[in-house]
Image (cartoon, rainbow, N blue to C red):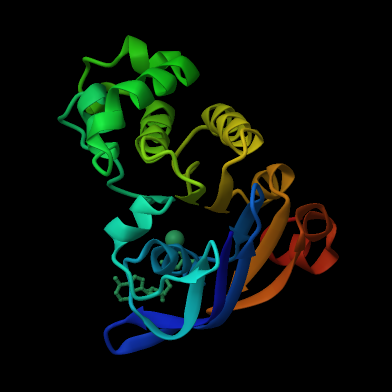
Length: 233
Ligand SMILES: Nc1ncnc2c1ncn2[C@@H]1O[C@H](COP(=O)(O)OP(=O)(O)O)[C@@H](O)[C@H]1O
Ligand SMILES: [Mg+2]
């Protein structure tokens, strides 16, 4: 589905934050990207979503090179990105947020909104409320639902559980697992490394702009070095 090959990119003069990262997300697969703060996890998701220009390397989606396309074009071909912050419009209603999420295909908005409301009844109940009135967990559901409005094949999630209580994070992980079970490919960055690896198929450990480990998620969760360094075990 998606392959990042030897990706080098960064910001302005610091253009080698990622120092040659490979990442594969197979069709229907969920990959957890873990690692310490500042490792480049968000940068990797931004490069896949089209927010950053690569210095070198390639990004393939459905067998085509897409590294020179715009974020909008990537959304159109099936890549949806949920950034860690500022991922909803607080003073707009839940319904308006979903309409914005569906901007790529306005004609399909009513139909997709109905299926979002069926999946997340809480959003239907609160559809006329401003998004700022939602709880932290509900906001993250809304942010994900906005991304689902484009009916993506690949969902990129940056720290979806950040700032949530353990209970709200668990509920969110259940929803993410359900989206994955429905066939959507997912690449998820998470501080909650252990929980992320528990619901993912594969994992990648990113340290200082390099993928230092990758493999089946359960193997990584059980790996002694990974546990000691990143899982606090
Ligand atoms: N907009 C930016 N401009 C310049 N440097 C940035 C920017 N965003 C992130 N960085 C730097 O890139 C590195 C990786 O950041 P990031 O991808 O956010 O790490 P992570 O998500 O793993 O915590 C850090 O050193 C950070 O300071
Ligand atoms: Mg980050």
